[in-house]
Length: 506
Image 1 (cartoon, one colour):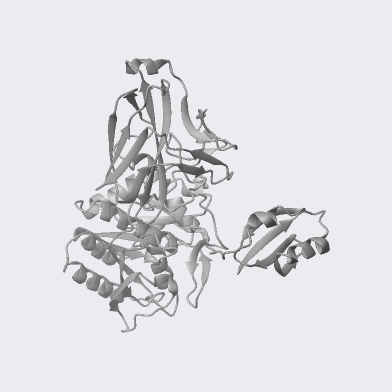
Image 2 (cartoon, helix red, strand yellow):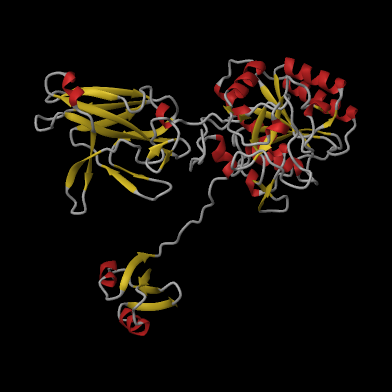
């Protein structure tokens, strides 16, 4: 048995329609407000028979659906050069095996968010590693949680301090445990300090020692709307100080008396207002604060370490800060004017740089001859090919159907895609758009646009050709060539590497 969901027109006589449908099966529900009837039928009943009934508008097979949530906005902001944000979180890596010391209130790992996450208990001031406050657990979920985490394959080392009432000696003891563990293995690591204390020269001096040993220290700016220089560790100008912004790139207050601290010591701003986080007792909620922003930055730093494993801690820190997007933040300059206007940016997969050949490049190929083009991937891919594809505009839902030219074929092996092009004598001189489809190891699909310039005797014949064409199929299932518009025609494909709005690159 199977079930059809049947949408009917507003002028239908529901009683008559129900009677007619009953001859095909069993009506299991009638939804009069949305005008849908559920009909259970035998497997041999064809959908087309139901569709032909008068007043039936649409028929769909009810095969069950999987409801998925949209990717959290803070992740999308990390991989979007500008607003509006991309639709897919596509980091270049997931901070694989990079270690982040989370110096906080402990971590309770029973939440489903941590299924698949690696969290190692390193030090606890009281011998108990779980989190009764929820602060440390929140930071952990943003670092390597499997839904809201920035670097899902990084390793968190749980360093529990008496959060909210720690003595300087207790903080120094935690630093001592971190340094001892760090010295047992090579490589740059991260220390996340999503907290502040009144300025301490002793604490700052020990942080300098951690940095000299190869640790990148990330510190929350603090939430009191005061000068960060009065606090530690953020007031130390060698750490990465982090302020908080919202989904519209605004540095604003998120509650009464709650806003980011300011000053030249605050190096970066990151998502930190109404960010999706886990609830300690189960489920999800949202949270705000520079602590959240700092945890997000720590996850991003792990990606830079993974991608640049020959660099020192200082070089990684410089790279993270220098790679941030400048002048993107909307803020009150009379308050934040001394704070660098830098928004954190993750290492993300740029569809224009998946291959070693720049996207939108045209390759001249001679009519009646065989040409072989090779594309070397710049990142691990699960598969790649040249084939038919349908591109969907994320904002309008419009589809563009690209068919594969019968005179071009591809093969993919060991990171190399080979495109063999054999335009026959019947192919007109012109420029022909092709789309390479790539799927990464996270099952995210990317499309890269190139063009083939078919000439007869000399590539100079293409100088007179202004517009490209692509092969598609009309409503009668007939193949035909159509012109590619001058503007970009779907969100992922923009010559400026940003996004498309209203058919124009922005």
